[in-house]
Image 1 (cartoon, one colour):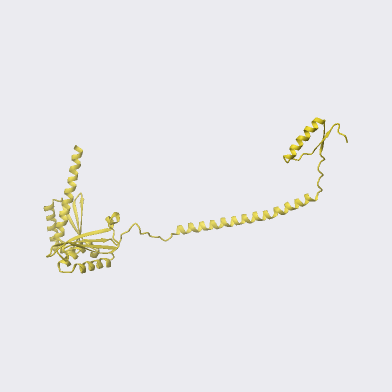
Image 2 (image 1 turned 30 degrees about the vertical axis):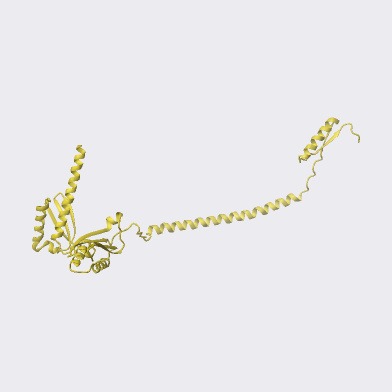
Amino acid sequence: MAGEKAVQRKDRRIVIENVRRMLLQEYLMKQTQRAGFGGLDIQRTPMGTRVTLIAERPGLVIGRKGSAIKALTDAVERQFSFDNPQIEVQEVTNPSLNAQIMAEKLANALERGWHFRRAGHSTVRRIMEAGAKGCLIVIAGKLTGQRHRRAKFKDGHIKYCGEPRNTWMRKGFAVAKLKPGVIGVTVRIMDPDAKLPDEVEIKPPTAEWLAASEAARVAETAAAAEAALARETLASVAQVAPAEASSDTEDVGAEPLAEPPPPEKVKASKAAGKKLKKVLKEVKELGEEVDLEIEVKGDKK
């Protein structure tokens, strides 16, 4: 039970901290709307809480002699109970690639009376000309009638899910207040430096790799030359061997062949001679040749 209570207390602290950070972001967005609010980064350090505010025009946030930023720091410490907050202001390098700034500008254009299609297409064109890989703009609300509708404007490469979307897609949201009602503006921009999983970069070969490949090529050429020399040697040996064999056969053929030995004569009695002749007949039927002559005792010549 004690462990479950500790987990509940920890979860509650996390929820309270996230709610406080969201309220601080909304407060700073409202206070620095004229300066072009571009984002917020909150980090807790041993010296206190460091709040990094990204703005299009930092001079309006700092004020004359830092009076505006001092008042903003006191308000943050008093209203949101942050320990020793330190607000730093950074200037946006390219406002056209900041999703929050572009969402605010698109909402202001709608409030000034621009048609939503004209405003959406011009914003997409401006973002893509700045070098973004992709852009998606969603305008939702009472655009042309009394019913809610949604219009999308997109260009380039867009990721809707997965790790590339969480890593490289920047999101901004703003609200335009018109007479028919409230219109929500959502801008998503893919970072120009995004490295997608399907992008493969082929690097040029290094000097070490070139030297190793040249050494391998030389070794392969030497091995091929040795193999060719070995094949030529075997071919020459094979040509000499049949000539010697033919000369040997000619010498052997010149010698006179020896006469076959005469058949062996066997003397047997009458009964034994009949049996031997019967056996010889059976052997000849089997296809065997036997050099044997049977001489029966008592036969008349």
